[in-house]
Amino acid sequence: MSPCLRRLVVPAFAATAALVPPALVLAQDAATLPPVNVTGTQLRDPVEKSYRRMLRGMDLFERERAALAPGSSLRFRVLQRKPGVRLDNLELAIVGRGIDIPIDVAPDRTFVLPRDAKAEATDAVVTPNRKALTMTWRADVRTPGLPPDARRLGDLRLECRVGLEAGLVSNSPSWIVRLYDALDTTPAYCSRKNNEYLFFADRPLFGVTLVAGTRRESLPVGRLWAGATDDPGLRQDLPFCDCEMLVDRTYFVPLADASWPHDTLVLFDFMDDGHAAR
Image (cartoon, rainbow, N blue to C red; front, side, top):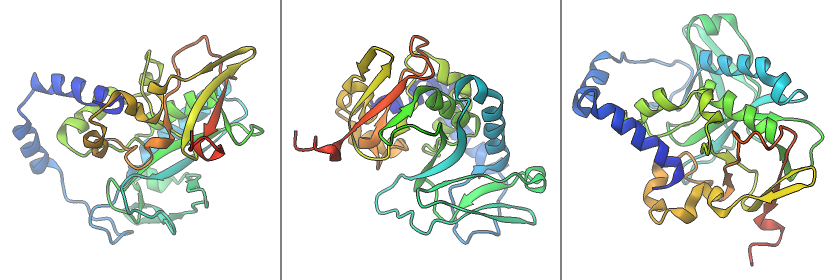
């Protein structure tokens, strides 16, 4: 089982087995969840995020920026998840009762979420004109002045914390994953040893190197490509991971390892830099 699923299935299954049978959970879900009418989209099953939770992520960014990434700014990013999905001409909006606020999406598919008191009060959602599980979301924390092939470790630490506080990671909607989401996706997860929060580079990766002063270490291959080298059954696992279409861009970094300072550079060696043939 791939790293992106190992933590996902086992804790949730163990906890649920001690609680109620799966059939009962599903029946209760069907009985208690009210129908939702979203006026701002014509799609039957849009992928959407809670506006309040995304605001919580923004608040966390403001509280923790000084410690982790003092010169950074926050945007949100959407990424392809399923084959055949195009994100060209993507439309995003904050939608709720009497609320329909368009959001400007940049060409790199990042956006700034505006604050609106009425939308927060009515528990609005941030919704795209795309169906569920066709795309995924991430926080995007950037300190200016870095080279295009580099990130800063403190920025990535804050990205993880903001992303989990905002509820951005999109996994399978099954009952077992919904329980996992409730148990194991708080910002505290980012401080766990060997956590496996997936980051996405802009292009397919050949390697990733951490640099802090004179210390320089390459990430082991098991920390690249969603741990694909350790998972012979990856093809079967991928539908449950929001890395499904971007495996070759994914990597894990040692977020919880305090021996790497926040100013550590994360340097990317991209496949299209001439390494694909090798």
